[in-house]
Length: 200
Image (cartoon, rainbow, N blue to C red):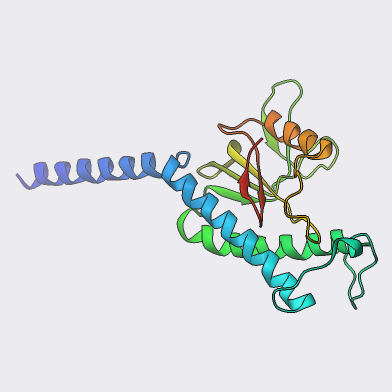
């Protein structure tokens, strides 16, 4: 009887382990994807406000007329304010996203992975090669498998008071088309502080 009990216990443990494996090795469901997108919206909005408040004062942002001018700061990250602010805001948003998503979905998202599509096999590959590759801001994917893409997101921080402007410039449309070619179960999306998640 003891032997039979041990066999049953091992079988139960194996079933639990298998169920656990099935549970974690998958894409996020719609509710979980909604949680991720809420985090993205909040982090992008917070990053935008945080950087603007630190540089220009609480509740203030850079006027449109200054966006293409050289940043008046000790450590310049780019030749103009538009790109300088974009770098700072992306960094702040990535830190927030990493911290919050790692709590619930540590194996289902990657920040700035460099990916390319093999022209012969059509497989998506993780790469360190710049030529012929893309680097989306954020990818949610199959558990512990970056190349099985679920959704791609690109963070956009409009400079100045460009709140109501169309985010879908010809350049952005082309960028999203390249991301769409990598695959996934949903169209690539923009994430902006003003509009949240935007799909074309």
